[in-house]
Amino acid sequence: MGISFKEVKHQYPGLKKNEYVAALNGINLDISGKDEFVAIVGKTGSGKSTLVQHMNALLLPTSGVVSIDDFVITPKKKKNPKLKPIRKKIGFVFQFPEYQLFEESVLKDIMFAPINFGFTKEEALENAKKAAELLGISSDLLEKSPFNLSGGQMRKVAIAGILAYNPDILLLDEPTRGLDPKTALEVMQIFSKINKDMHKTIIVITHDMNIVYEYADRVIGMKDGLIHFDGTPKELFSSPKYLECHLTKPDILKLIDYLNQRLNLNLSYDIKTENELIAKLKDVSL
Image (cartoon, rainbow, N blue to C red; front, side, top):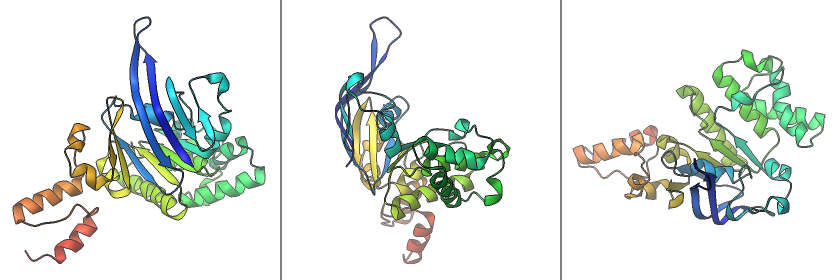
């Protein structure tokens, strides 16, 4: 169960008549429906967003097959299943999801999606309150207009609206873009908790290699519409593949490289955070 790509290609219309631009060039990929934390990385135009938009049928393949649990998505629109059950299984948190807020109160906005997916009003209310609590949205904000909140609070409300209908998989497109460091950390810690405690699969597109190294257990590196790398963050940044995908090393690895070179240490890339590095340095005889 999960998401599977078999020889998936996708083309966009070009500027000229009968001209097409390839965005995906034959993708074969399997992602589990639970317990994975996957980062999808690569330079702009590498195919990241196109790949993810196939994962809940926002885009249909030009050729090949995408399977989402028991649902099979093909290029033939008439033969495809209704999309609503797929969207219920896979929640998509777009870039700047706060732009999608529209209800008169925070609570109604969070309740909108579960009601749209067939939950009763009572179920939607209960789920909305649980999601708000998980995101740290205080009860005194629930009756306020979402447009009177700070940018960080609005982002949390939008994410709560996705969590309230309890999808199996969460797709996140640059979830921390535009957030201050404190709110960005809070948001990523929440997604990490959802992954570990609720066993949901998290799939995140990001240009932030610090997020990739600290949170992801699997990285898919895109290049020219193909999967150029699929493995752990440690494997990626220990090889030339990260350069081939036009990536930079996370800050913690840059620091480890510097300390190893200048102080002749042998610090491992298993270290993921500054606190882990400080603890390790205490055990090292300089």
